[in-house]
Length: 438
Image 1 (cartoon, rainbow, N blue to C red):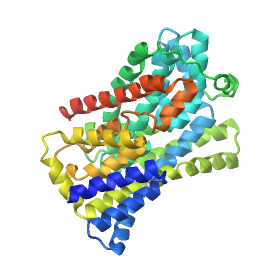
Image 2: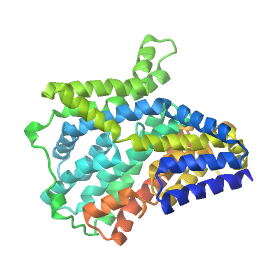
Image 3: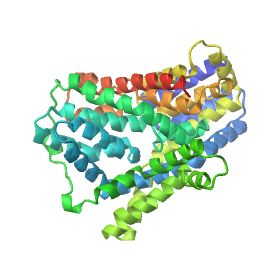
Image 4: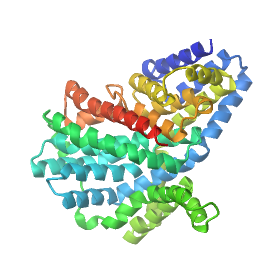
């Protein structure tokens, strides 16, 4: 019976989102109420559980996503992302253009949400392809693979951040393990895969080819742009490495642990970027703050979606269903990491949204963490890998890619969907391999 309740809840969620086109937050709340009542809760208890789930989930996430959105906005508007890409392309040259774009996508993708990174960097992809005479997909796929991987694998992106908080995973370790797994996934799904897929001809529309690019004299310096984009990752990673290398009580370790707290790291990064990419470049503070306000407004839908998933997770726990699921899944001979990946893959295929797939799966497999010795950091990455699988016609990224590259649906399935599937499978292989070591 408990398992039937969960399956019915997921089916109801799919129906509300896919068929009735209901807002994801509303769908999660309605499903949470329905599941709670099916578990035997009264209305008051169900509402209390939902409130608790939203509160517990959104505590740190509001700060991380809010600061992350602000940092991304500054990186975007100042031209820092464009500067990073132009210098990388100039440094690596035409011969290694794929490597240049792959690294660019990764650096920019760490601080920008996927859609924002896509809109900023795609004009450069078109420009590079036109100037070098190389096939457009050969040039574009390595960059888009990097953007996709950072979106699905690494904090401070919404799903990885939310899952890490739910699982009480160490953010620094999640980032370091994510980097180890991400680089092979990007290389195989970008430069390697594009050699085969670039035979498909992309013919972007003229209006996209004429997308605006800031003049060189309006761009910030490379190193300022580089450090502004990577500062959160640097601070968090330093704190994690200090915790491994230095003894407990060491003042350097203590200091770095404070700086490496995800909230503090992002706050410092935002303030640094406001100063060096805004104030020092003669932007008025009022203009900068207005821009940051709009950046936070733009992610309210994502925050509500995550809040709804937190409510769903909590009613599963409070109603006792999560314990049953944990015991039931725990009896399976399959690895918990593979189960997390498989469930995320299934939901991704049905719903399309990687964010929804990731955080919904987190609520379902949460009890596995208490009944197994699996690393919570690796579980974050396993679910993140699964959440990127099978991007097809119900995936917003699918249509973004199709329209900008002017491909048929068939060719988009043969390129975008294959790339996303490659990322998901490569990520799973990396997680399973890393689980043998950590």
